[in-house]
Image 1 (cartoon, rainbow, N blue to C red):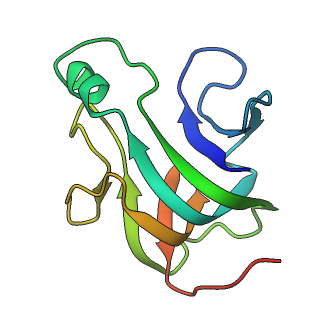
Image 2 (image 1 turned 180 degrees about the horizontal axis):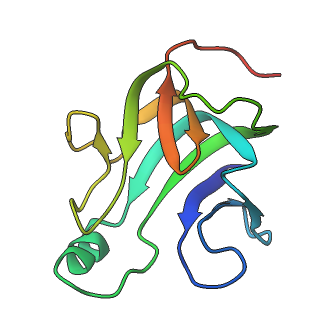
Length: 131
């Protein structure tokens, strides 16, 4: 079953944590200071009209996430930035779509593997398979 992973920005105990939701199950939350999330067979999803309203000044609401076929939560064991091919960024106040490091629109782009590092999302340089 596919998972949806996003950065949780609602005020409360899970503020600024990664939210992982599988199907209709309750979400799980992970502190980006403590874990990395490896995501496999991913697609960057976005609700463009909602993002455009947020960019025009509306209050933020959920409008973007990563959909993946599988994922792995790993303890964060290093502090340096990993070797990466590219970044994936999302901030509807700056652009109404997912952006890569060249600020190109990458909505709905598919990746074999993405990983989190702190609050960031990367396309890893070294592609490893998962178990």
